[in-house]
Length: 367
Length: 104
Image (cartoon, rainbow over all chains, first blue to last red; front, side, top):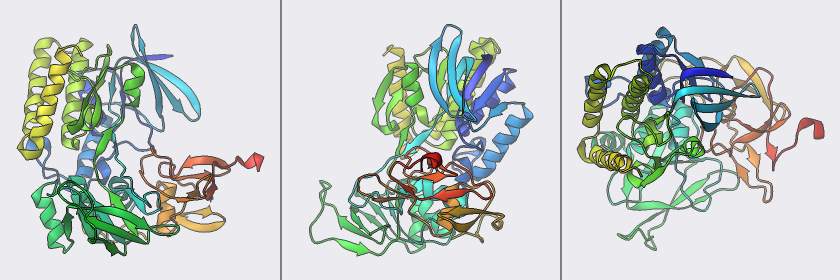
């Protein structure tokens, strides 16, 4: 069995950034991903990112993806694709990673392992919710922006967070008709600038509304929506039937934590970050020796914060391997923390900032 | 339907291979997942559930939910959202849990 200094699991924004930092420190890194292409969900993000210049703001997601891929290539990071990881084991020498490759079971031991498995979209339960044509908003986004295929023509978007707003706009850019964006809460969840684009395009954003049911025999043919009162109860007589062929669900993300559970990580429950999160300290180290977490698995946020957490985990793992002295690592980590703290500001960022403060306190408390 | 013209992205490339869904020829592009080629051809029902024969199609698009599984080249339960097309590939609408080709 092969033994290496570091294994990074997941080649999305966090995993690519972590691998780059380890390679920059002179470390050996194997980056594993189950998909046929690296980049995670970056290549479907065709909008310009927010933040300041040092966060690569103003650059479209896929260009950031291309930059990261070029850096990993230039630095000689070994990328192993089509390799789903199915188990992690604690080991006296590090963490054992079991994965499949071309139908065979294989294992690689990393002295340090960084988990960057990301998150999955939440589902919503309603009658007709399993009909073909009901799908995650991120799924539709991949179809239009990466595969260049429209999943439907007449779309109802559910959820007005940034994913719902951005994907609605991108569906319009791809030529679909977004009939309405509905939101159960009394106000819009995402940034005003994104909501403004939807409204200017003529699509109504119906707050205080939810899906009552989806109608159709073998696929979505119509959607019945209903207004909600202040207690989120349907108001009788407010039902409307919209002739749609597609329903996109954008109601949050849940971190993909299966491997962290298998490895024996301790967890804490923080709803703002998406639910159960592996406890991690200010180095992104989990409670399992040698195992780090970064990106959405450590709390569902955005690609920009995922990249910074990946960098932090990469620098910290390099330091733990002795590739950096503490004096070398400290300023690097501090720079990452400063950038992350600016990303976690504003009405939406502040909640995530507070949640991460709570996380660090939990990690310090040892539980 | 394919998105050929786009306000931000370059023009889409043409289909360069063919796959077969229940025997019907479907144009496809090298490097795309099976589900994309099927949706482009207007096919949305990928399988039927085992007990009630309910139709199912793509849902999560990242290989997690397994709602989009089909029988591909005789192998059942293949996740079509993360499995890439290959020229001449035979894709079948899956009934229930599916069957291996040699058992059929």
